[in-house]
Amino acid sequence: MIEGSKYTWSNDIEKYEAVENLFDELIRPALMSDGGNLELDLVKGHDVVISFEGACGSCPSSAGGTLRGIERALRYHIDPEANVIPTNAYQAPTQEAHPFGGLTYAQQLEERSKT
Image (tube, rainbow, N blue to C red):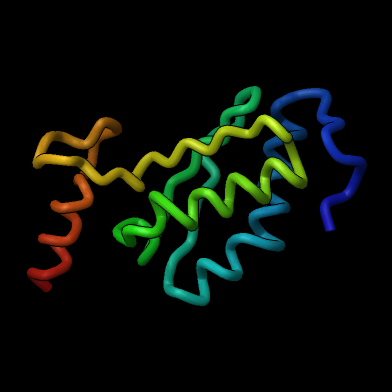
């Protein structure tokens, strides 16, 4: 699985590579089997910034169970204090603007229903 001993990263670049390997081995295959994927955007300290792709970008569980599962895997294999920050798994309580730009969850559903 992930090479090297747990929690021994000398810098964020090494941690980024370890997270990318973990995603390739454990996370992406499960997401891709349901038509989704994720992109690793940034690793800085304990923060891991991701963007959901495909079906995951508009799936309600990407902000809940899927996100918690990813965070649990990262905490077990990479960093016990990992904090996963998704850029597009946001469900706005109203039709306000998305905090990272792009479409809110409701807007994504509306767009998908048009096609």
